[in-house]
Length: 107
Image 1 (spheres, rainbow, N blue to C red):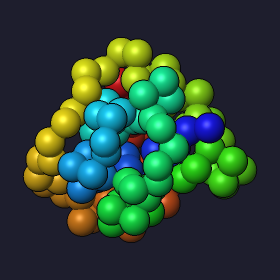
Image 2: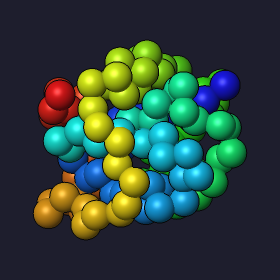
Image 3: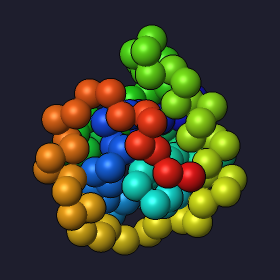
């Protein structure tokens, strides 16, 4: 099992989760983070760190967010690891309350 970053992360990209990950499983895209399922050890320490509640255990991903499970795996193969936190995107606070923003995901 692994953890999955879901839609709430898009256009926010808070990186609090990155600092606590013991295996450097997070990958960074232009406006989204993904978790590499091969590196994730299912420790769950990242979950409470996410201010927009975007991270779920694979079996707990809400039905309308399940597309993000294979998407995390796909993007993790393309993106580079992020191992230290960075400032959130400039308009993260505005986007943090937007529910439907899949179309805004940049690859």
